[in-house]
Length: 224
Image (cartoon, rainbow, N blue to C red; front, side, top):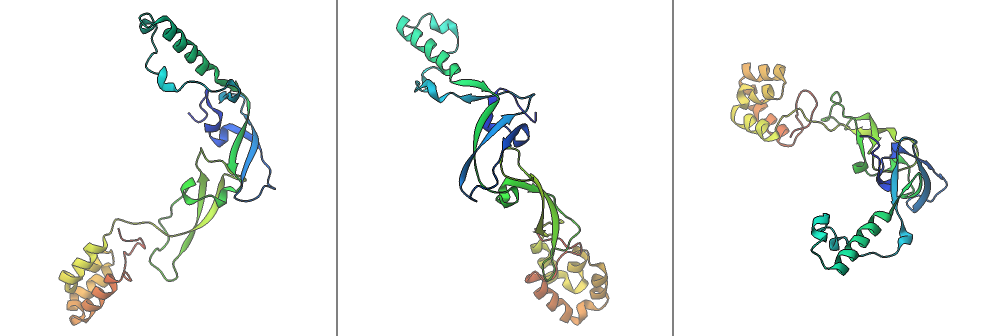
């Protein structure tokens, strides 16, 4: 359910509320905004004017009227009153105040949004390639501006090739081009196979290049 009802207003996803934002706030500073839930959504806020109440642990164990009968009269009354007071602490609201940090959505930490991945860019290149990703802020995060935005990210994906396997093949069967075949570079693999690893010279060079990570998978992905 995108917009749950009867929950805390502060826990609603950003798409379920409309806030009067102020873009003149100071970046990185706490700020409060007046928000209104959408017509089809209802939420509750805690009534701070109700004063202090007893801890939840005093009445969480007593939920059935069957147990209220054998409790002492004064204790049973006190638990029933406390339980009613707990329910009155939350009031249904359409307007509420939300606390957040003043910053635009594209300024959020990477953990607060999700971006699309690209499997067509080369991760092993110099200079390292970037791609334009479409990023979307997570539902429970509140920020200023558009919640979907483009961002330049480094190519960072893997096709399942292991560096340790490629290096082991290069050391043991590199003379037959097994390392190049494993990485999907079949032309170079055939060249090594029919030249006996370039009479050993090509084999030694590949061990060095794969060891430092200069030679990678043919599809441009990263090693696992």
